[in-house]
Amino acid sequence: MVLTQHHDPTESLVASADELAQTWQTLAQNNKNTRNVTSSGWLEPIGFTLFAACRDNEYAYETDFNGERGGALTYWLLESLKKFGTGVSAKRLHNHIFSKVHTQFEKQTPMLQGLCDRSFFGNDFASSNLTVSVIEVDLENKRVKLNAGQAQGLRKGAEFAIYPDTADLTQIDQRLALVEITKLGGGNSWATITEMLGERKIEDIDSSACALLLSPNTQLVRKIRLLPPQEKEIDPQIALQAVESAMSEGKGWVELVSGDESIDYQVSIKADEYIILDRAGEPVANLRPALKVGDPNAAVTVVKRLVHLSKYRSTIDLENHDPMSPLKGKITVELCALPDNYEPGEKLELQPFDAVGNIPTLDVSRYACLRICNKSSQTLNITVLAIQPDWSIQKGYPTGAAFQPLDKEGEILWPIKTSLPNGYQEGSDILKVFATVDGTSFDWLELPPLDKPIQQKNAGKATTPLAKFLAAYFASEDAPPTKNVNSAVSASYEWTTEQITLVVKKGASISK
Image (cartoon, rainbow, N blue to C red; front, side, top):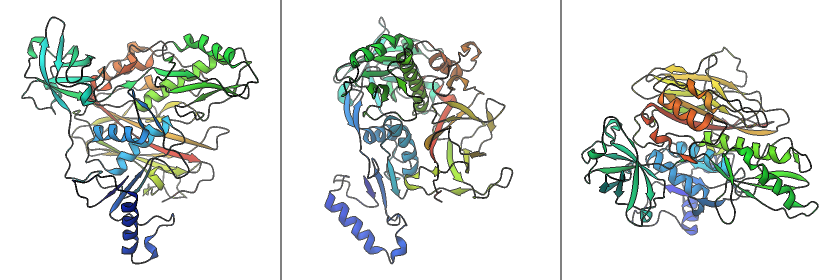
């Protein structure tokens, strides 16, 4: 996808191959000398922004999303635009999409080139939020009929916030209720009232009300397919049946599917070893040690690994989807390089990264600095989780406390030193930053490295609405209360999150 500065809005935004070639040649001719060509061979980013689904040696994968097949980049691009609006910068959009796509398909790396700081569709486009009309209220069955359905792209389980007809949608305290579509129609749908808010009563909802769509759910329960191998050295049926029999160890966090159902992971056998594959059939990296089919505990360990991967993915996917949250976009997160000779305690001389695709790649034992800025009008409490390549999730910042207060318009500079687990040559780290109004512990989301026992956490210690939400859905070893959760309905006014990805690779040279 290439976005140029000028286009005819009556024409398709997708240029033909000839148009793209002509545009590229024109840009090249306008350069005065070869110094305008970067060392990578790319033209200087003047007048264009290039979004690519993958690197030139990779494939762009398609899979099922909400029952429909589509490209991973396309799906997450549209979902991200719903979250941030069309005025979001290309760089921020890419950073968000990268982690979504790359955690599903390890061999697909979305790329960004060109003017990374310009808004994705330009400033003339306003962020829109889907609101629909309430056309009927069924008091007896505690449900409402919405003037929207499958034709508008809705799905069963979609959640809405109900407002009075004259309400300011940016004011969360004006919401009357939360509803969930339980009977999907073509143009109209019935939505069951799941929660009345504040002192409101169901009688306060009438046919003049409107409903604001809250973005898609965070998936908690992952779907697994058993994939018979091509080789026949062993009886695959017996080996895979052992995994099926061990699924009860998953305690509801994973479930088997068959046929053409959408999946998250696949389990197969290769060279007498169990392997876990992603949706595209690529082996999930860094699952160590190998599990021999003949090991009596191997099948149970496979299921426990799937549970671990499920919880790991759920934390990566966790966001405040409420489009009207007052904290939306109020923190910014940036990873900066530090000088080669930096030593802890010295003055921080921040150097912005200029890595290909804006995903920094660093050698081990290198220093970088995470900069967190509070753009809100109030003090926020900051916690950073380090989501690491050994499949662990640990609190990285602050040390010795659950959170660090950050004044309005203030910033936190957190120097970090890169490392890799023993035996690793490369790995991706995600730094997930949470900002909350009330002091909140994120211990509920922590995970040990793969194959280490997950410690039980005392949900009774949760005090804030957000902490209670996290404890209910993420802390238990047993099955979550539901297969999906819409985090927008849980204390959306009091928290937000941003995340950034970096790659640590032995021998990598830093790009500044």
